[in-house]
Image 1: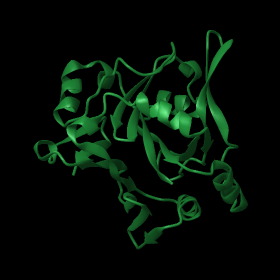
Image 2 (image 1 turned 135 degrees about the vertical axis):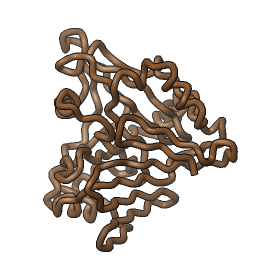
Image 3 (image 1 turned 30 degrees about the vertical axis):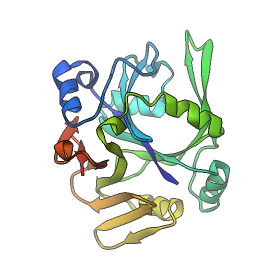
Image 4 (image 1 turned 90 degrees about the horizontal axis):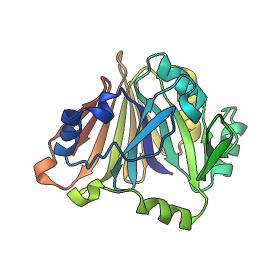
Length: 249
């Protein structure tokens, strides 16, 4: 299991404001918001960071144009920031069965499909997703993702350009999530992850070279620490919206 990508609800300026786009470039991230998938109902722009990425989402219509229904509702209710936390797994069916056996009601692993043209046409992506319940204390949810095969993975990696790896920023090292966890949220964490440590105010999850930290706080926010070997960019950071900060380390 590893961190794959973060799905982030954004306002229009993140994709359209040239000054903001240049700020993203100044920390070494080659952001091209005009690229990325979309329909008449939503627009995606990606920031590729090694083998991980940010998926920035702007909803353009009431129904979301084929985007995930519950996330579309949250967007229209004012949600901005981290909405979906994708974890790449090697055995999505096995992980799903483990969650279900512990009364974590994850969705059945299914391919991601986008519908458009009055829902008459659809496109199926080369991976399966399984969505865990939304956290009760924080406004996001984990979901599992597994590509169909190594050929699909190699194909997708070809499209992860332009990539910050060219600037010696090689991936996501740590995601720090500040806020309050409900007991059910803690149960999800303990069931989903094998290697974790808990104390009074922090839960630390180890995923090989990556870490996910949950830090008790009255205010919800997210910090993403990048693996930066570029000295010129190593102290720079940028804030997206009002609760997500990307930092080079």
